[in-house]
Image (cartoon, rainbow, N blue to C red; front, side, top):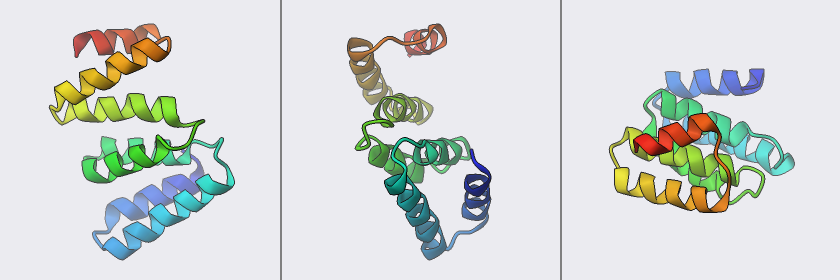
Length: 115
């Protein structure tokens, strides 16, 4: 993550204030709108997922699915999120779609096979 994104993540995780959290997400979405080639949105969603903020992560991955440059990584990382939550049917469904549409790395193939 970029320095600004690291700062956003730290503030987001320290607060439970919904307005503050929404403002942070709004800033990230604004940056993404100005630079759809960047990966801030997916990187932030991954950080939130890794910190147990599953609902926020899922919402942000779903937003990233609408951005062509971010769609493939967001789709894979959303499936990982579903796996972590025990939502295996949805996880496998996404992975099956990914396998039909693209080539996975050896590490990704191993993870998919485990599911």
